[in-house]
Length: 313
Image (cartoon, rainbow, N blue to C red; front, side, top):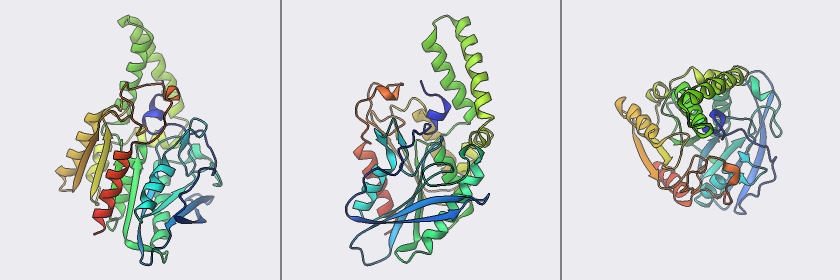
């Protein structure tokens, strides 16, 4: 069972830049500087045959060192190509990037904190707004899992964002998420309550040691996702699967309520049998490598795309 890293998006097994792009698009590659001075490689996929400036969506993956495709399991799963193709087919540009030390980016991923990721996102957005093919008033950010926390922080600093798409984004503190998942793991290992508590404590000590070695997770561990949600300045759509055992459905309701309490605009959509990886999984499989179909749920994708299109009208 993958634990906290899986819960926030899963540590990626980098598949490089080999995923196929939709035919009806052009792709521009470029670099920006990260806060510590190393380069971040990115690309902007633009729909072909569009004469007017188009909206753009910046995709931010969950935790773990990920390339611009957000690929897992030796490339059998890749979230960003699915989102990219869905948006491109609807005339929306897509901006993706390699995280530090991944793909063509420099730096060391383990040194990158949440606020470093926020600044990288902001610099990518500036680049997009200055592109002749992009409508500067129609810039959106899509954040999956931990990426939703990063997207929320970007919105708090950018009142001009057109909207946020928060996908399986946490609505509880990360210590609570970790404890919940570790107790699930312990329960799978033993039925004896006393032994279960020992397993839990051992697992927690192991994971805290790993978290302390990772700047992003360590920063996120001390943040309250609901407090971040209260700072959002953009309209929001939340997409959440009912079969997500890592970010339980109730967290989406808490997240939506936190946004509404500050007067924010939020739509909440729940999807039957969809898990944390946005795949249809009625059985709630905890070992993702055992899945045979890694196709992202079509209804969830289309709901996110349709909301972005309506927000640009």
